[in-house]
Amino acid sequence: DQQVKQNSPSLSVQEGRISILNCDYTNSMFDYFLWYKKYPAEGPTFLISISSIKDKNEDGRFTVFLNKSAKHLSLHIVPSQPGDSAVYFCAASAVTGGTSYGKLTFGQGTILTVHP
Amino acid sequence: GAVVSQHPSRVICKSGTSVKIECRSLDFQATTMFWYRQFPKKSLMLMATSNEGSKATYEQGVEKDKFLINHASLTLSTLTVTSAHPEDSSFYICSALMGYDRYTFGSGTRLTVV
Image 1 (cartoon, rainbow over the protein chains, first blue to last red):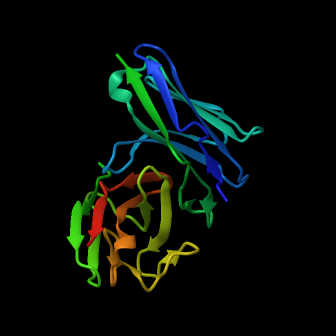
Image 2 (image 1 turned 120 degrees about the horizontal axis):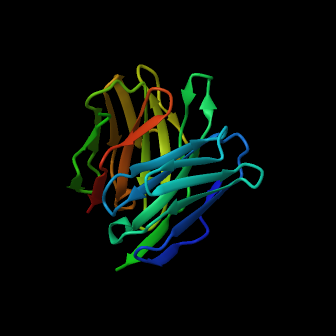
Image 3 (image 1 turned 90 degrees about the vertical axis):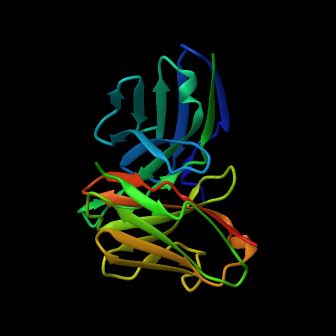
């Protein structure tokens, strides 16, 4: 049962344009969402996160939007740069025991290629 | 801050031997660490959640006797792949939870069993 889904395996964008990566989830207990960037044979690098009390969070070129009713989130990168080319994973978590968040559940990843 | 060191970065071992992978939080104390496995071009699959001083919680389908996890201190968790076989070859990644909601990942370990 894939609780976090990234339905687009790949995305190709021209440099300077906007990249939009999408993610859907099914578990209504998830209330914290994160985006990671990953290169082969390396660990994921944190990009941006959002809690369920917000519908938007922005950090520089990266903006994450959350639509709780649709159980959908998206990552916008603008302007896109060739150095952004990597695999992007969305992940979700829920509070456990009231003290902290627990395990992350990852989507399948989307390969972003930004062409010069 | 919030650096997680994982090593070795890659290891090749013979079938039937055991391999230990270390995950250290360098500048913070991690009460909870997670171990993931990634197959080529696939997602990160959680194997187990490790809490300091207690037994790890394994995900369904993960053999706890094959993948031994020890979290003896607030800065160190280890994953031992026992009696490794070629099908255990994979990319293993650890993650540490700092505070309430900050997850930091190690750089991963490429295990090849020959």
